[in-house]
Image (spheres, rainbow, N blue to C red):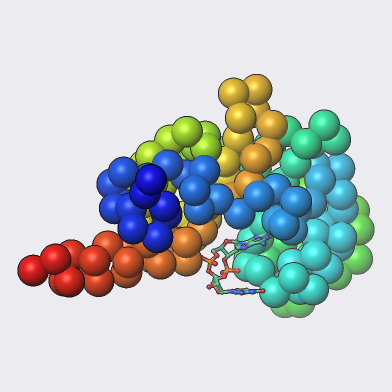
Length: 149
Ligand code: 4BW
């Protein structure tokens, strides 16, 4: 039986390299931007998924968007961090895929996005596919093909 180790990227599904939901830092729609910024700073990530109260995927929020929201004419108006909610600042129009999509679909999406959110058929958050996971697989493919010659 072939394992992820010796499979070609073109034969793989997203489920084989997905980071599962329980390992992904996230925030919720109703959280204030202050909480989202804390999660982003403490996790070290530039952007994380936004979920609703039932764990359905809703969008993505990142540090740049948050800082833009509180950027005044000459200074940052930090008190606004507690006034604005994540749902009013996040990017909602982002592509999603399912764990059954091919890794090639993921590769296409990751050209424009550092990570792609994976959802089930009802929109519940399943995890993320990162560029890192895809690049690791691309590297394996290149090495495997080099040894075949
Ligand atoms: O805390 C980190 N741990 C590790 N192991 N690597 C990290 C960490 N923070 C950043 N990195 C590296 C990764 O290679 O820097 C790249 C860019 O991070 P980003 O985008 O700009 O914060 C990381 O590349 P990646 O693994 O391909 O991840 C792409 C993007 O996916 C990240 C972040 O927005 C999101 N992400 C990755 N893992 C996540 C996550 N978001 C929430 N929870 C996670 N566990």
